[in-house]
Amino acid sequence: MLQVRDLSFQYRGGEAVLDGLSLDLAENEVVSLLGPSGCGKSTVLRIIAKLLDVGKGAVTWQNDPELAFVFQDPALMPWATIAENVSLPGRLNGKIDQQAVQAALSAVGLTDMDARFPAQLSGGQRMRTSVARALAASPKVLLMDEPFAALDEILRFQMNELLLELKEKRGLSILFVTHSLYEAAYLSDRVLVMDQGQIKGDVIPKLDRSLGAADQRASSAFTSAVSSISALMSGDRQ
Amino acid sequence: MKRLFLPVAAFAVVLVFWHYYVTLNDVPKFVLPSPIAIWAALLENIPLWIEASGATLWVTLKALLAAVISGVLLALAFSLSRTFEATVYPFAVILQVTPVVAIAPLVLIWVGIDNVDRAQVIIAWLVAFFPILANMSAGLKSVDANLSDLFKLYGASPLQRFRYLLWPTALPYLLASLKVSGGLALIGGVVAEFVAGSGTSTGLAWRIIEAGNRLQIEKMFAGLLLLAAMGMLIFYGFTLLEWIITRRQRG
Image (cartoon, rainbow over all chains, first blue to last red; front, side, top):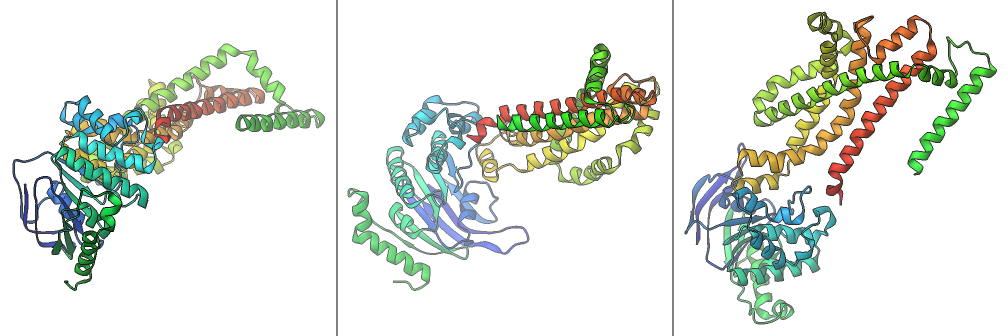
């Protein structure tokens, strides 16, 4: 549903951030972009979301699907309640769909928090609010820029489960930027390893989703995916 | 409770010390009157003090309102055009750094000959305006970059952007600046009355000058006391407003 071809980009007066990058995202697929800081991961997402102009290359969508973006920082409005924060996409589009808002809040387990303010929530709850706000836009594609990087390990595991559940229930396609290769290996249908503005290679983890979370993480498919990714990152292909 | 009690107690101690120092040392009342004499001067002519305080407060509030409207609009214009900001901002700084006592006589000559009240408002506006412009400008620049991107992603109109993002972000900055500018507007109003001089003005500053000319030092103190009380009222009034409006954000 998304094709990115030969994307090159540089910030004004800066060095090239992307250098002929290509990638695809299929329907109901989770693709991770993994790489060291400054390799251009976030820039790819921002170009795809039209927050930055395409430099050279092409970004092509099939059917122009509804997009939503989740940042590393929850980026909530501190002056607005959780319900008001979640209904932001609707408010800006001129029609607030209360059902969609409630469904999004219930999907992330925050139904009884809707009248609170962000400052009254924990870090994990704020991140859930941010995900709920993205869901309230009823997106087909979720672009996520290191969304769980600031969370502790336990919360991060919980959010990973939540994300996989949402992907199945809502048929989402997810482009996920992370610098955690474990997270990438666990969440993704495909992991794209990036370096210096290019895709160095991809890894397909093939986890057995019928297993429980702990069993999936202990499976040989997971460990093999992690070692393939790590080999790709360090430069020697297996 | 402690925060209220301590300053009140300290003030009471100072008053008691002051009173006994003056009475035991027979300090002449045209040098330093006792707090009781000052209190008596205050009670002696309550309608006069109410009228004078009302006149000064009215000038202060009008100037503050003008400062808020002009400061907010100019800050908004700055946020829309960096070129405009670069062109105009230095002039706002010039207004701020030039002592108001030096500008006041000019303003009085230009607009105050037949209307002292208008000149007073302009002079008070001159000193109150800059903190609002500077703070509002900083507030508008402090918008969360990610939130700003979200507004772009969801196709917000410029009006929606202002209403739901820029204004709420800048509001705490504006409220903080009101605490400063409220006091400054009062100072500006008083300076204007001092410069305007005799006969034309009815505010507290003029009552202080008048009392000084007649060596009624206790009346001067009474006027000062009212000015200080008014300044405190303005400051704590805006502090309360700030607390009420931003309490939801603190959690």
